Length: 486
Image 1 (tube, rainbow, N blue to C red):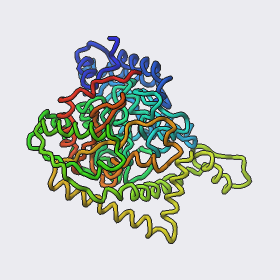
Image 2 (cartoon, one colour):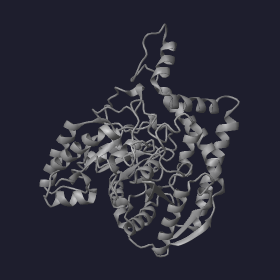
Image 3 (cartoon, helix red, strand yellow):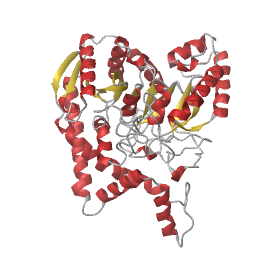
Image 4 (tube, rainbow, N blue to C red):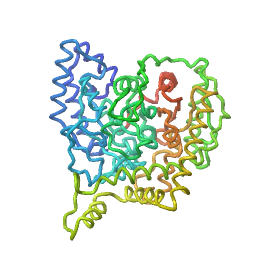
């Protein structure tokens, strides 16, 4: 098959079960296509070809004995902030450029237990701090729909790889929109699960109370299949929740009869591009045609404070988490100094990029004596209000629907020197992390040849309803079937 690399998880699994292809063939086809597009999009930091082919051979052996599941033998890529034993984990930072972890993150263990094939690691904004994948220490990643545009971030490499068929699916992490915003920019499906639903053990921390790992896939059904594997309690993650994991594929129902959906007015704010507003409103009307009860007058008034609260809480946690990179224990170490204190200072100066240093300084300032109450404590109080507001909304609605991003993908270099404009790229996604609730971005249209995403937000631990609504819309439209020119 010439187009075997274009398969979804469901399609590839069926062919593997019917012995119409093998994992080795599928893996070789994915690697071949990855190398063809990589010079254009720069989605990957590390490609572990030999290890992937060994895993594919093991998967074929498992399939031959009948011990298989939907991810067995399916090639995937992983964002480069999840620890992979024996494979570099750089966080796209100079400070971890040569770091090879001695263990796997829990999500990697789970993929390997199901005989998945890991092709390598994807590019990202350094330490997941960014909205465009331009803040990688190595190179910017390009949008496959328009190579002059950003793919979004920080999981830009993972979303580009899936959109360009360089992998069947990928894993990303989401601290303020880092799965959903690039998924919207690349026209793929990106799910941020409820905080605590997927283990963070082995995920290099950015902001520990906000980070969450999730799937990036070509279809909603594929997202459900990946969630069935990676979700669940992990005693090694103190924030992991022990709620039983449902079979998420059972939520994939194509009609929306009696589903109550609220449309928060605050997300169609001043500054949203007309093309985005028109496309998302048309998509919402389609949800109504599928049987959903739409309330266009929903409101989350504290949403306007979410951006400010996030950029106090997240940098504060980052300043604490990144203090460990001192050049003493592992990672980059600047040696040409007079004493250890200067060595630590120079290690951080040359090891971290500008955006990471900017956020460390923001966080350190907010936590400093005399400013803690004025900034960090106040931001946490706002966070409580935002969470309460979502709880109130979900007493009336089964889900909320918004744009994923207020803009179309923007040009590379357009916002990189304007941090405030860059931060505003995540204005629709940040509140969801602050509240800890699940949300998905799905393809919802195009304008000027560029993708537009729609975001569906659910109650805590109700990924089923989010997937149900997303699946029904996907089945009624064909946006997800379009392929980028790359």
